[in-house]
Image 1 (cartoon, rainbow, N blue to C red):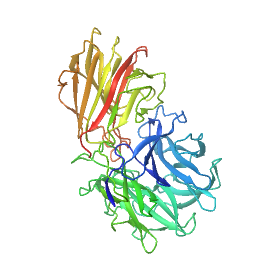
Image 2: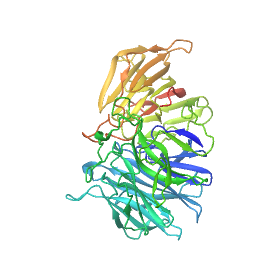
Image 3: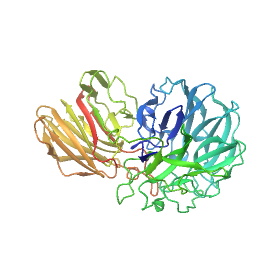
Length: 552
């Protein structure tokens, strides 16, 4: 056996749905307001995971105007051995106002995990977090959370199951089967498995904050009744302490923070087995800043080793329900600590597959990759926009890293800029960019910041850039960001000003109600351009690098 260190997929990789086909493992994750949508990761050893692509790449969803943290939620990946098809179920959360949670759910299929994927087939708007189960008798079932909006009824609602025709999306009829198997409440993200004659129903429980967990029930019938695990507690969590929160909203449960656990928020599990017959669960988790209840890296993907008990229940292999950092996996494996570093020199007609864009698609109308060794990004909306911001971003994956680029820009109007920065959503970011001086007579490097929707221009700290070309570096360390620059390659790096406090660029630090998680979408690094003048100017980027200096 080898040992892996969680998370196996750091940075924004939440709500993992894992699948093994032969000797290949695949994970899909939520992407919220980011395009392309639904990340697909691949591994052959469980230790090292690579982003191989996305499922929604052809304008299947319109994410413009998406409020944090709506968008594409909880995709579920399955494989039907009878047809050899991969299936993907997902929800598009459209509105969260008034806690109505209007969401449309869809199914897609592909003959290969690499696609092409079919056009989405509409399933339902009853709730969110659908999953598809292929029974051995050839029948197919959808399970999902039915979102409750009535006063005086237990929230968030029932887990419901229906037989479905996956080709057409036709639902046969919903069966309400449970509101959860523990007292943590907020049961969601149902997933059905079958083992030794029982149907096992996995649920995410306790909300996606510090009280999160994985709970399970079983039944001889797919429609129940389901009996809960005998422990009456989650089978995986970051805090085994008993929590009674039935009927509570999906709150942060900050009282459930476990100071003795290096990983938090463990929940939303997906079960699988290896070719050797070993069993594991993939689940989400978070890592707060030391001494804080802030999680800039969002919700990440981890694995836990499981075992079946003599009486037919699935539990963690060590006999506890506390999620672990170090986990045994088959084979002599070693994790590559530099796997999530990025060094993109824009060579040839392309760019890193890891680049994502908030709210809209990456299109040739604003991205020009036709120049070898150069990526041109044409400026459009301001970074406050939820419509057309010209942002190319990658998830932050470490608490310590260096983000660096070289950009050339020739601004002629005060609304134009091009540079590099840190981004959570349209209301929360830090942007070190080349722009016009206030008199519009020269090019300067200046930092612009958004904090909870407020615009902060750091005019006291700027430097003239006569050539219109500069290398810009951001050293990120545990919620602090230091901006440095150099105007010639042979020059030493110069610090622009004192470090910026960017701890708020975290799931709990962005706009949210008291007691709630403000978001759950994570910090990104980006290069981009703004042109609210004529949409004609562009930043010319020579490279983009992210070098993690800490694996945790």
